[in-house]
Image 1 (cartoon, helix red, strand yellow):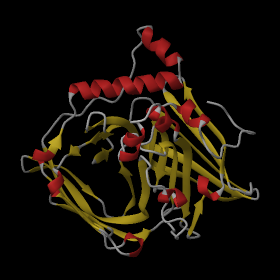
Image 2 (cartoon, one colour; image 1 turned 45 degrees about the vertical axis):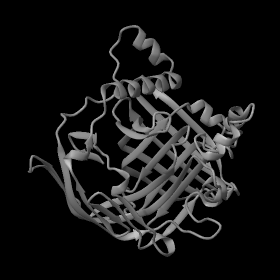
Image 3 (cartoon, one colour; image 1 turned 90 degrees about the vertical axis):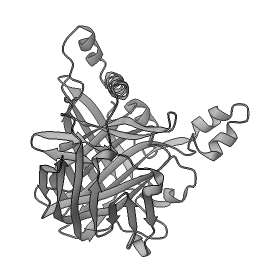
Image 4 (cartoon, one colour; image 1 turned 180 degrees about the vertical axis):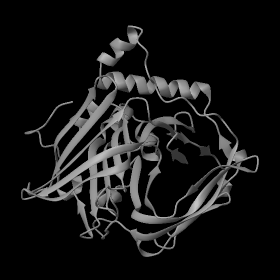
Amino acid sequence: MVLRDPDAVECLYYAYPLEEFEAKPGVKDGLGFSVRVGRSVFTADGMNVDLGADNLVWTSDDDYTRFVDKSLRERYERHPPAKDAAASGLPRRLLKEEMERKHLSVRGAVGFKNVVRFPRSWIFPSIMGPFHYLPFLQCYHGVVSFYHRTTGSIEFFSDDSVERAYDLEGGHGYIEKDHGLEFPINWIWLQSASFKEESGSSLLVSVADVPLISRDGLLARAISLFPFGPAVVGRFHFSGFLVALHHARTNTTHNLSLYTGSKIGALSFETLDDEEERLEIKFRDYSGNTEMTVSTRRPHGRGVPLPGPLLDSDKMALIVEESISVEINVKLERDGKIIFEDTGLIGGMEVVGDMASLLEGIWGLDTSPREDL
């Protein structure tokens, strides 16, 4: 659970044994599903949260140090002058200071209404399109709710006294999911469902390098038994992208994902004044008549460290720095006419791994107007 208010951002990780997990599949379009973790229940209509302080897991100092080293290494690869600045003894800002550790319990009920679902068909059964049918991917992505309004509240307790309370009436919501064995190798992720002018609209952008055969799956283990097997498994991966914008005013979902024939016309990623990173991506549909430009920027070291699965060590560990307060500028044009232009507030952003390698491997990259890293 990521907690955000004007003064603090932190991630609280609660772990439960497998026997306290229960899932019931839904009917058509996933409606009617139910997931129970401990005493918490999640459905398509809302969630009842009851997280006990005894299940709260704090990150060890060793895990935090490994995460900081990984974040710095990736930053230096994207911006070599930052390494020179650190070596010269100048102060370096890694991540925001960790908040005071308290044994917090979480209780509350949140309802979802006016839910907008991503359009589906037998060809495109999910946001992944036909890639959804590939059987051995390392990671699968899904959109449960492209946009919804929220009701209810969440309270955080410390020793039975209310530490913080959040009123979620009238809030903007979005729910996505990942399942598989591990996250992709390298990726960029952006999302916002809180647009300044076009309320009710929602954006998802994901550019990722995904192994076609999960390196820890049964198929990969079988192939690795043969000479050169591990090398063969390592070559089966590709960089693709998922891009979708729901325009509430016209009730239209614009899908410029790779499987629709769209291309990335330009991608630039740069560091400004060694304090801020700026990202801009241009997507073009198969005809070249529709273009979407997405741009944002974030300060260094102000994200939230998030845990994810690491099969090598068979545990959850800090692997992602996620910013959840960026502004995302979006412009959608068709035949030279602007049909959507707005700024998404309280946006999410992740930049993980080797960006040069990610860019080089993108399927559907139009190199003619490309801006290099």
